[in-house]
Length: 237
Image (cartoon, rainbow, N blue to C red; front, side):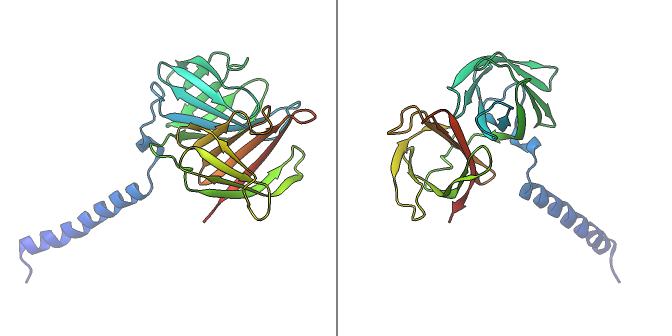
């Protein structure tokens, strides 16, 4: 015959197991609420987005917004020079920037996720809130993919980026991956690389951003008029 104590243990034990299992699931699947993003203090986060417009040189411009101390925000792209401006938090769920490169932007958030980007001149897609890293997430990794023109045709069938640990990247447009040039880049939040002036082509620039394990890339080519190429590269393991 079971004693009272034995019966209580029998009933409580499965209950404790269920709680432990639920806790484990939460740890394996962290929500954005656990990331610590605070719209009133977003320093340490960046917004990645792509945009286009009827007269744009690309159908997939990359734009990176970096939240800085003192309610300042800075932009990075391959097409426009970096710009910096103040921003204001409105209503607890919206950030409105002062003009950045001539345009203001409105970011809307819900449940610590970015839900919308507004600017009357551009159409946005693939917008993501990204937390900066304390360690360079590009260093030691190689990415390969195709570069596309605005019209969707392939510019380079095989393009390689190999990142060293000293803020340098080896670049190749050859199928073999043999290095054709090496660039020093500006490390942005340990998840993005910005090359202001490509070696041998000082008016060209490029940007590479790690988003969900893939490398989103833009290259601005000013040879014979402005052209901006784009691609999404996979890591080579």
